[in-house]
Image 1 (cartoon, helix red, strand yellow):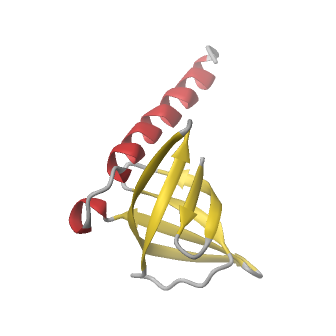
Image 2: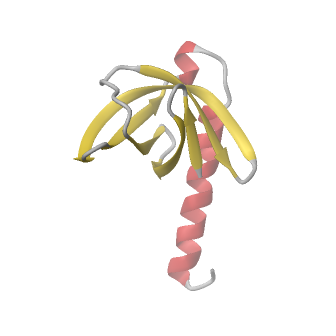
Image 3: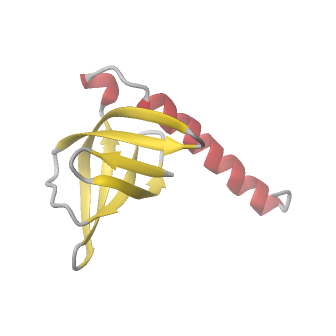
Length: 102
């Protein structure tokens, strides 16, 4: 699962939920910044606008950003649906692994 952010290129997604996702980047954002994003999962692309909700400095040039999907409020994209599908996909995968049926 990767995310492509405007002016930041492709980043590995480190967390995903129905409302947003997290990435690690060296680019400097501030809370409240909005950027266009594209998530790529299982060959599908999900686009939309996200807003920086949290920032955690991990080290030199490594910052974890929590990004909230604001798509339904500001533009028309398919990211909200994509986040729902990915969350269910990862939960199902984890449950199968825990049950030993992976």
